Length: 263
Image (cartoon, rainbow, N blue to C red):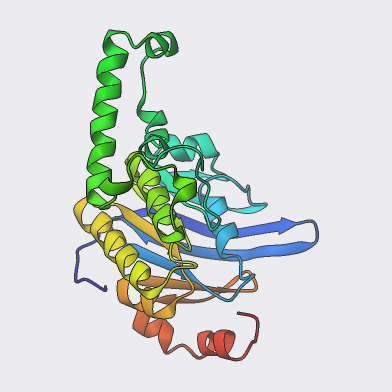
């Protein structure tokens, strides 16, 4: 446990998940769990099945075998709208932002699920819808303050450097107030300073909001610093699962990373 924190019960468990595309086996009998409030890393060489695993968790892919249990409910597959409605948010390897829209408007799109009022009321900015938009905007402004991006709130995100775009994408995911936040390589392409900032924000999200986090990350020093537990995939199979220290000392993990020139 990286930060000496107390975790709750199991929030998510995946059991014997197998996923194939045509004849290609992306995941093979993978099982692990994620506890409330922990930071859980998924690591492995390129092509190990890490993003496929996140896509199964948030309902983008439907596995051929295995079950997912989330918040005590077991199912063969999750659907993307169910995942979103039940508090699962996601960022992507390739930034999926609206490049022509401002930082503020991009983060506001993350509030869509929280907007309950009738579309016509919203269109005309009438009564309850107006009050709801003000509340949503206040929530977004808090996220902008939290991520220290006040200076770019009106800037079109397409003009921002890569590291800041990643931060805006994190903000949009946080706007949905997720219980489970899936981060797919949140630090890819960043310089050292940007990585340090992102690490700090991930730890703060976990600490201040109590958000459970599952992240895929290639930078081993980052994984060892901020994760509570680590699951290791290789060629779609789980080869290790444990604390950062246990995983670092595992011979099969060492072989997967050092013995294969694919990373």
